[in-house]
Structure formats: C-alpha cells, structure tokens
Image (cartoon, rainbow, N blue to C red):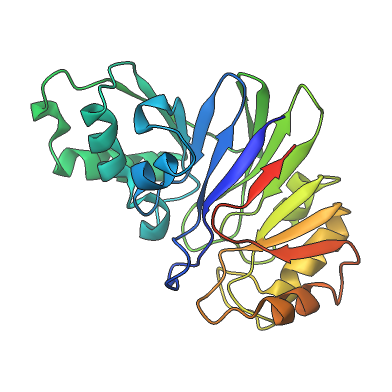
Length: 252
C-alpha cells in the first residue's frame, strides 16, 4: 500500500514537539515530498530514506513554514551524491520563490550539481498529475497567497487522501475532498475563524460537507489540546477524528 508519512504537523508558529507541516508521499515506485520544512534529511533518515531518493517535490505555496527547508534539502541531496534531475511542481508564484531561494545560495557554483526541473501547475479550476501509481489533483484554496489543496489517489487501490493545505473555509476544499477516505485539514484555531486559516470546528464542517470517512487535523498550534480540537470538529462531523502527530503514517 502507499503511505503518506507526516514529517511535520505544526502551524507556522509551532511547538517543541512538532516541526512545521510537510509530508512524504511514498509509493512502490516514487517518493514525493509535499512541501519542505524543517531539516528534511534528518526526518527522512528516521524513516530509512536518503534525500537523494526523493523523486519529486510538490509545493503548496510560498510561505516560509512550507518551503524554508528547500535549500538544506538541496544541499544534503547533492552531498549524498544525487546526480539525477529533481522535479519540483507548484504554482507560478511558488516556483518563483523557490528559484529565488536557490539562486541566493548559488547552486551553480557546486561541482556536478544535479538539474532541477520546474513544472508549473495551472489550476483553472484544477490540475491533474499522473506520477507513477498516483493521480494528484490540485485546486486553489483560500489563503493569503496563491495556495493549492490536493487530492492524492492511489490508482492501484482506488483509495485517496485529500489535503486542504492552508486555507480559510472554501468550497474548493469540499470539492477536492468529496468522498475521500481521509481528509487532512488544517486546524490552526479551535473554534474561531481567522482570515486565511481554519479552525477545528470549520474542519469538521468541511469533512461533513465532503462526506469523507476520516478527518485528521493538521497544521495545529503549540497550545493544541487534542481532546478539545477533536470535540470541536465532531460538532459537525460524525466520523473518526484525530489530531495529527509527527511521523504518523496514513496507508491507502
């Protein structure tokens, strides 16, 4: 089965037990990082994977807590002997930010530096990628900067996981999560709305509207109290609710 491994689960202001939110989509024939925070090589080492073994990176948006790990990941992959090209996918604005970060560290000066291939996603209203055994759909969410929500489908099993990324309540999240086995939805607050983000209460509303089987709250703040966050989400959603923790594994 495919795995989605949560390498970090914290909000932009995170706590000591969590890195900022990013994850690894691991299949039989491909490894894809979804966003790049923290110290990716260190986190990947804990699950037995080297940075040179990542095939692609998919960036949801250009806020620092979702892309600041990219330069050190690139350095570590090069140090590990990577020579094959690396594919990076994202919205135009996100790719520009990634390119500027790597330009700042002057990767052109590194001997035998591997090629980076940038792939622009145009979500009007959605983009669809076929990568190995996965079909990945992207739609725009509602955030301060252009941001994409994702639907990850394992074409072998037919199961899928939806991920809201950072978002205010948005009909696009309901659309992309419709009938999903799992919805990973940000819950930066407990029950109060805040522009550009969602609460656990609102995540539960989205899960109910999308008729998903399971809801996992992610991108949570340092003061998160799991029982309170679950209880808020379950005011509207009757399915299984949990709060994500670093290194949780979702098989699908």
